[in-house]
Length: 381
Image (cartoon, rainbow, N blue to C red):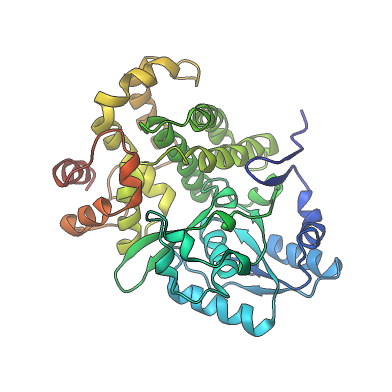
């Protein structure tokens, strides 16, 4: 089966192998003539990035590249990107890469002509209405990993380098106008990135499915997303050039980010401050936390996982799903604890305080408190 399609949900998505060749045309379709391609340092000089730049140039676009983006992008990266964008007279952004590059790129397009600091647009109540929506530049997103789903997200996660807090910056018009999902771009990912990003998509689906909020569309998408990860991540990990598995994982990433409009929970609430303070890989951190968060939420989520476990390919209901998650993590060499992950003697009080202030808290199945978050975190140290 050829996995090639055009979708208009939740935005315009050009999906299929080789579709990176449409990058210049996609930019032109949203009015770009001088795009700035924003990516991270690790991708900056790789062949896939050079190919993207060549496609833009061959398409008659006067493009440039910005790659001063950290693993956990911060306001310093944003300031540098804004300077390049403004100085170069760019008229749009190509967001290219994994979650870090995509998140930072979206903020460059968003913040170039805003008059307030980026923190004023945190995802709190209606703070997004403070922004001038008329001056947001167009965004074309090209994911090179299959995990965060930032390519179909209306927000970016930016770390405040002074307070070591990850902030979710939201505006509905930060959603890219066009997304190009080309599974060929993910083939060269290192195995640990394939695993970590894939498990990030899995965490999005698991937490969205677990959230008590009412969103039947998100609920259904979360179920199918979990199923796709379970069926395809092991193949993508073991056989990197299997384009079917890579394509299904790109779909799972899209689905996870679409589904978590229903809500996230304690996995992300804890993962955000851990990443901000210790610079850990986000998806891998989520995977380390998932078994204990499932235990925390068990009283509220057992029945719903009992209902879907066999459909997504897991026997034994919720208990079987918990056993599956442990084995699934082991299959990708995921650390059992944060100390195994290089996080030694973390400041539990600071991390729990950060988690309780994270917007993801509101979507958790069980109400989160200092006590239950402390216990959950201490179980994985």
